[in-house]
Image 1 (cartoon, rainbow, N blue to C red):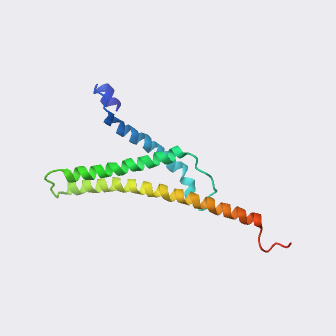
Image 2: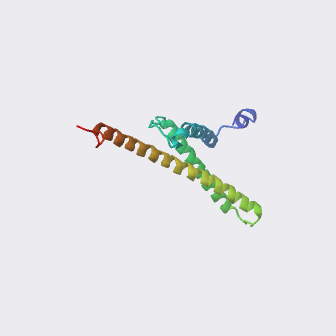
Image 3: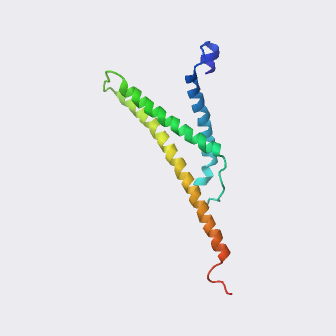
Length: 139
């Protein structure tokens, strides 16, 4: 963006904000994945991930990747006179990978959210059971 606007003296267009937003949400997605890495352990300690900004950033990045994949599919199939050359299949494979990355990011975030909710519920049940005491206690 620096090269296009400053060095080449091109006028600013609002469509230039799309790559900047994708870069910023991509950085938030990377930070989200590093912070949530500990939640994939089997010995998880219940801790809230209170960085809602990271959750939203990851979701926005996934949606932007998904929409970019759909747009590329649309652009490829909109080309007039498509020849079934290997380059065409490479482009379709590339678009498919981008689309799948977006879908996987959305599914992964939803799965992790449900896992954290289930762990919270289970820890609350365990705390209630600890207050009640076990059935083997002598009175």
